[in-house]
Image (tube, rainbow, N blue to C red; front, side):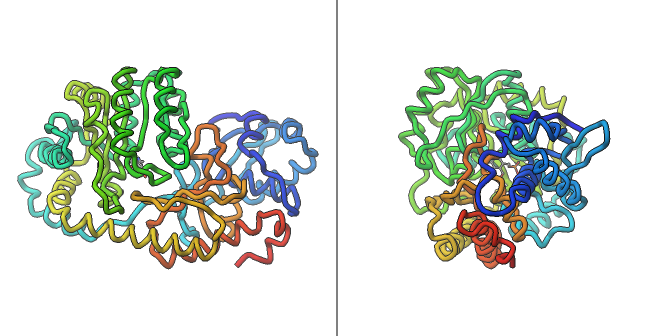
Length: 477
Ligand SMILES: Cc1ncc(COP(=O)(O)O)c(C=O)c1O
C-alpha cells in the first residue's frame, strides 16, 4: 500500500459525481472506478472508512457500502478486516492506472484513446538495418556516453541550427526521452516545496514529475486555448516560481502554437524575473499547418531556456530517446548529476536515431501526412457523432482538446470504458482537477478505429446526460 487518502480529498476528486436517473450506488461505483483507472486513486491507496466517506459525500452509509462491495467484486477495491480498504486493479488492468492509460495486457479490445502514441514509421526499420551495418566501428570502446554519442549530438545541434538557433554539440545531452529529460532538469533545479509554473491544461506526466519532486505546480490557465501573456507575466512576477514548464509548440493537449510576438514577450519576462523555463519541444516537428514556424523559444532567452526534445512522436516512442539543449555549463552539471540516476542512453538506439535524422527528409512529411489525415477524420467523425462538442482544430501535435459541454468528469471515463474506449480523464491535465467538461482526443490511431471510437464515445456521453441516464444499459453496443 502506498498512501492514504482522506474523505475530503476523495470527495474533491469525485467532483460532481451525481446527477441523472441511474441508481446512485452505480454512479458512485463508476466514478470511483474511473478514478482508479486513470491513476487519480492509484492501486494501493488506502480509502477512508465507509462512515467518513459517507459523511464527506453527504450520502447514506448503505450507498457507499453497496458501491464499494461492487468495486470489490470487480477487483478495484480490496479489504481486510482490521486493515481497512484500498484501491487495486483487477488482473489484466495492470498497465493502465497512473501510466496515462497504457493498453492493459489482455484488453486489446479496448480502444486506447488515452494516449497520443504513433506507431513506428517504416523508416525506423531501414535505419536499424543501416545502423547494423555500421555496428563494428560503433561498438569500439566501452559504450557509456553519459552526454550521448558525439554523432547524435551533432545531428541534434544541426537541427537547432536549421531552425535559426546556433547550437554546438556540447550544448546537447541525449536522454531516454523527453520525460526523462524533464525529470533530470527538475532534479537539478527544483527543491521540495518550490513552485513550478505550468500551463493549465498541461501534459499530465510532467505534472506527475513535478509532484514527484514534492515541488508545487502553479497553474496559469490557457484562455480560449491560447496563452494569456499578461497572466503569465503576472504569475512570473508575483509567484516567483523556481521554474516554468511550457509547451509553446503544439501544446499538449490543446495543439496551440505560441506566436513569435508572445515568444518575444515571454523571453523578456523570463530574463526580467530571472526564471528558468523548460520548453518542451516534443511536438515541434508535428506541424500540420502551412504557415512559417516561429523561432524556438530559446532564441529569445538563450540563458534562461532549457529545451527538451524527443524522437518519440516523429519516429517511434520505442527508441526511448530525447535530448536537452541548454547553456554549456548547465549541460555539464546535468551530465555529472546523471550518474546518480543512470549512466547514459543505449548506444545502438543512438546510432539508429542518427540515421533517422540524417534521412528525415522522407520520414517527416510521411508522419505529418498521417497525422493530418487522422486529425481530419477525427474532426469529421466528431461533426457526425458529437455536433454539439466544441474545439479548435489543432495546428499541429497529436491531439484535439474538446469541450463536451457536459460536466462528466471521471464518470465519462468509466462509461467510455464500458463501451470499449479508454480515455484520459481531463482532471489529469490540470493542477486542481477542475476541467470536467474537457476531453483530449488523440488522432494517432488508424482512421477506422478513430471513427468507431467516436461513435462509442458519443453513446457513452449520451448515457450520462440527464435525459437518458438510467436507460444506458440499452444503449451499450
Ligand atoms: C508534451 C510531451 N512531453 C513529453 C512527452 C514524453 O515524451 P518521451 O516519449 O520522449 O519521453 C510527451 C509524450 O506524449 C509529450 O506529449
